[in-house]
Length: 629
Image 1 (cartoon, rainbow, N blue to C red):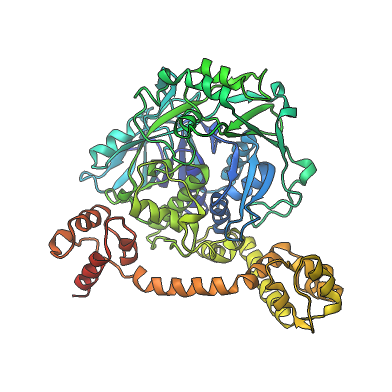
Image 2: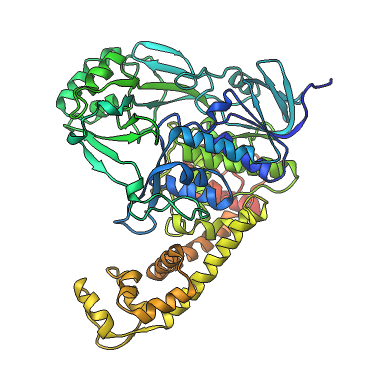
């Protein structure tokens, strides 16, 4: 059979955050790549909140950037406000976040993708897959126009479009997001091939006309005076005076009573929505129902961009009837005269429980078929983007007949996310938190480049410029570390500063490191009171990130060393392989639940098996003895 269209190495289906990263990575690594999306004007569209990063999510974006992905640099280019969250806590908790210009983000991502020599585009809707006669190997895709595109690998990033169903009160209709139709056909094909399918729900709040808000009744939230971006290549970000403000408001009992009048017409409560939504981002009606003792809930009014007055009301996600949404909005202090531009809605969509994928994100059932993003049960742009990046990387490596890139839990938050999905599964949209990472002191946002850039460069993704910048920082940190440990500070210089911080004064000269180890003292405090010390530091570098890095390394050296020791111990069992063809039912001493879970998930290593819920310590011992024999 002859095909009208050329053959590709990799086809990426879907142009959201996962699809953009997947297509960009595969093309950058030399694979001839085709990105097929229903609307080329909506590439990397921020269909929910116009923001990137946040607690743990910011770490994911930094890791994407360190490997050579696109989300970090595009976020920095299009941010309207930048904030580092959790600065009152330890550095393992610091998380960058930026408010983004929604339309500009999509435009800049497309521009970045169009720079890729090996990347081609097609505006179309994929309705079916092509595969071998036995259903074991992917061969390409079929679109609604009847065109067939052949490829060696396919990455599915269907987001909320897979049989998407939008709910607003008693109204419901097919759609992938507001104003765009759903995608049908692929789910049926995957079920026919033997995949298990489920349904999840997410939602979004109403958008409002910012000109109709009384800001005097809200609390202003400014960005950081000295902002931190996501990309290690970014040199300059807008200062505090150049950033847009966000605003904080609150619901009250009156708002709650208005919302309750719509409960009988709510798809959440009348049984029309049967799927599960994200626990950590509930709708406003779910909040007032579950937390009846709370007399108010916090809301964040966020700008959608530089050149629009449309605003996003974070914290007011809802699928209530539109008339109830409108009346409730006008009961919120500051919103008495508000005009609603778009109503909030809930959306149900297909996902495929992630025990069906490998750590490379290739499916276990069909060779060469990869899943990334919400199709695996996650929520959030950042979670989707990092999966897209890994699927793009591993689809390119697959085509090049190379071993997949697998990030361990001790190497990256990305590794934690993928490991969690496969081993623990998810029955609700999965969201990343710092608490999910047992090695979070090692996986900080500030050192993502030191952890991952060399790896990204090795596979052909991270640029030479990025590698050199990382190596320069690494060398500067090593020199700074040596200087701080060797330099002696004197009481006459340090004591005034120590007294101001209620820290004990010095009886004699000490090494700078000893003073820096005090939690109340920062490196900048010391430099401000010792000109000679400051000049020696400047001789090494003026890079603020290198200074921050060395300070963290010195202050938390004990914790970091313990974590490294723990990682080494875990690696001994982590990398013990388990043959894919093993029949767990033949291992008689395994528990019934252990046999069922191991047979379902088919872990690749003992370490992976140890994290499966339902697999006991005795099951692991039995399995290890069995493998040795």
